[in-house]
Image 1 (cartoon, rainbow, N blue to C red):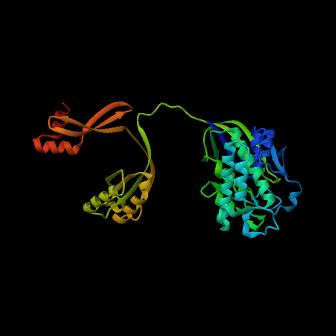
Image 2: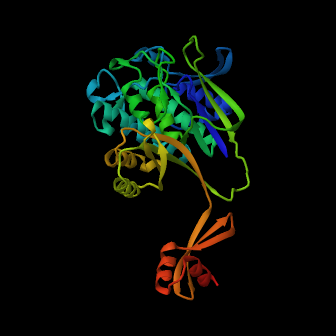
Image 3: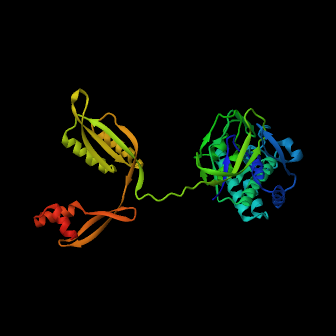
Length: 414
C-alpha cells in the first residue's frame, strides 16, 4: 500500500507542505502550470534548496511582490492564515475575498477534479473553523487580499501535489503546535490560535517544543482534510523522504518531513484459537454472607461480566475470606466497577489487563432417542475437537427418564 506520511515534529504550514511535497518528487513546473489555470495574477511560486540543522530540503516561496507590504501577520510566520469575519474590517481598508468567492474560483478552475475536491475540502475546514471562532456565517468568512492569494496558492498547490502523487493512504504522527503568541490581523493571540485549535480538535497534538507558532491554520486544515489515519508507531519500510524548509532559523530544525512508506505486513499462519484483550477485576472479601455473595454474582453478570468466580482465601488475622474474580470486556468495565462498589462490601479492588485464548464454538440442534437437544461443538482451527449437549437439556431428559447425565449424553449421541 502506497502510504504518504507527514512527520510534523516541527509543525506544518502551507509553504512547508509545498516544499516537502516538491522535495519528495512533485514536478514544480507542472505545479506552476496547473496553478496558472486559476487565472490569478500577482504571484510567483519559487523553490530553493536550503538547510536547517544540517538537513537539506526545499523551501517554497510564494512571492506576492509589492503586496507583501500589506501583510497583517507576524512576519516570522507569513503563512498564518489571515482570515476573519467580514464585520472586522471595512471594504475600503482591505479588498478581500469571501469564502463564497474563493469556492467559486476553485470550482471554475481548469484543474483536475481530484485536486478541486481536495482544495475545497481544505478551504472548507478553514472557513468553518473561522466561522465558529468569529460567530459569522460560513459564506461571510473573509480573507485579506494578501491572505486570500497566499492561502489559495498554498492550499490549491498542496491539493495538486497530493493529486499528482496519488497515495493509497495518508498518515500522520503527533503534531507539534509550538508555544508563545502569534501576531495577526486580530492582534496578539496565544498559540495555538483559536482557528488552529478548532481545526485540530480530536487529533493528536503536543505543545511546548518551540516558543513560536509552528502549526498554522493552513497547515492544520491540510492535515484535518487529508490524513486518513493518525498513528503513534508502526512497522514500515521507508522508500523516499522529502523535507519542507520553514522560514525561521531556530535552535531546533524548522522542517516538515514527508515520506513514502511501505507499511510492513507480516504473514503468519492463522492461529487455531481466538485471542482477546480483556480485564480481570479482583477483590478479597471477608465480611459478606453466602447469600450476599450469590446476589453479587447475579448483579455482576447482569452488568456484563463474562465470568465470575469465588475462590476461598485466608486474609489478615487468619480470617477466612473469598476472592471475587470478574472477567470483563473493556466496554463493560465502568458498569462492573459500579456494581463491585454498590453490591459488595469491598472498598477497593485490583484490576489487570489479561488475554484470553479460546477455541471456536458453534451451537447446533441434534435429534436423538429423546427428541431434539442443543449441542455445542468445539473446533481447533477448522477441525472439530469435541462436542457436548447443553446441561439444561441433559438434566431435563435425565429427570424425565430417570437416567444419569452421562447416560443421556451417550444415548443422544449414539
